[in-house]
Length: 316
Image 1 (cartoon, one colour):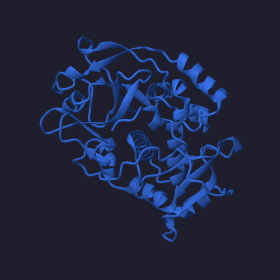
Image 2: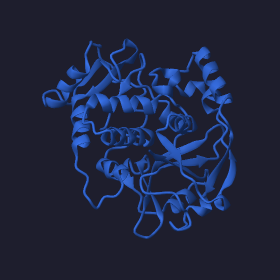
Image 3: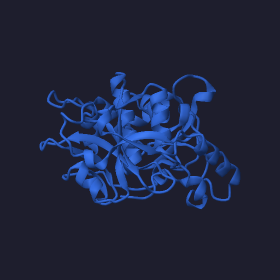
């Protein structure tokens, strides 16, 4: 796939249109109508509370809102043990499109289920699963979960977006949404997760280009990011489930990279294949779509010299 990971995570959240005031109930109306389903719309929707501070500019197509509600209502077969994989597999074949959220203008919460990159795929699936687990079939509730996943403390602003995956996972763990997967200590290796790519290459990011004050803010957050950590090295990712105790179907996998200034290069979901080996369900730039790789995770990592290993997290 493989562009520098922040280019996937540091995505602007827009499908620009003129804004209008709306309540959750008016957003619900758009879930039920077919006419104009493919046309972008924009609403300022209250999600989470009636406070004006919770008003988020929401950009989506009616087709997206209809699809969200359809997936929230979808019944999981009894033989499908992972609700994460059940939802993730509903996106098999969806086109891979990078930087779908990178648009000009003010920060908005974009809902786009028609075009996914590796990060938006993981965010979309996790937001759907969190909403389903809460018992809701509300589009507005889905949007609230998506906002909480995409932004530090759920604050919808460009500098609160979780641009590095180490930021994304740390925020999820801190807020109780996810927990790190524990591998046997004897299999782990120490690794320094140093992040500096964005401040080193501000011209690669539209919201940083010619905005030195924003670049300075990003640099400060990079410097405050804990570097010391551990990973499961690539050579151990081909071990059996009995050896890789802890990781399960549907766990989120982050692929650790050696690229200077980056922490992770790719993300997806763990799948234990019929061969007894780990595989990856992900949005692939190589194959231009969401798919389950037929090759093992270890084979996938081995073909890319910059892929050092993995870390994993579980949605609570």
